[in-house]
Length: 84
Image 1: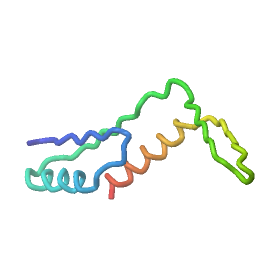
Image 2: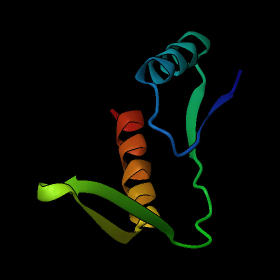
Image 3: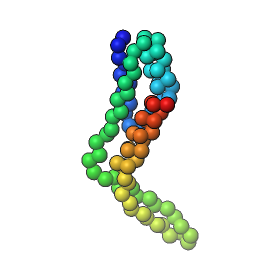
Image 4: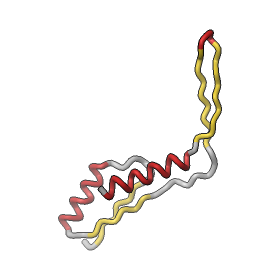
């Protein structure tokens, strides 16, 4: 083989899978290339948190979840694991 492609979605990468890909590349004397995919972010996600506080009063918090920054952080982490 001349080249191996290792595709990773935006979930945390399995280090054992990376190790196996590196092992295959060494065995076959192939170049290992990582492809890191991102999910498209179309609209913000709303998170509703409901909890009961002192006196039996229910507090409701509504916030936007910044999915794009979480995905960017996971993307960078996957690339770092692959490079290591």
